[in-house]
Length: 85
Image 1 (tube, rainbow, N blue to C red):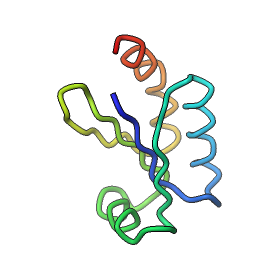
Image 2 (tube, rainbow, N blue to C red):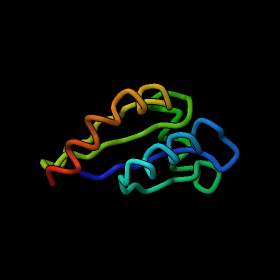
Image 3 (cartoon, rainbow, N blue to C red):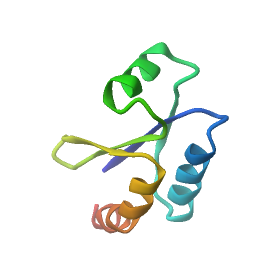
Image 4 (tube, rainbow, N blue to C red):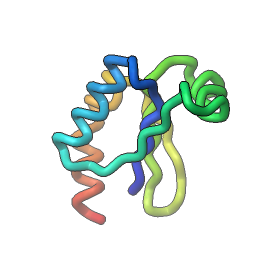
């Protein structure tokens, strides 16, 4: 499973998501929307707010999770899936 966080360095909810993932020892890739118009346009297209968290399952399917609250709610599931890899 891969985890991608789209956000910005100034975004407090983004920092919280990253802190939660790090505390759970879940590796992730951070994509700063201020450094790439491609990343920014993708977030606008999907949900128009940051953070946007994507999960890639072992079969290659991507799921957009949403912002901080949604990610926090799913951390237990993410931890379980990552520990099963």
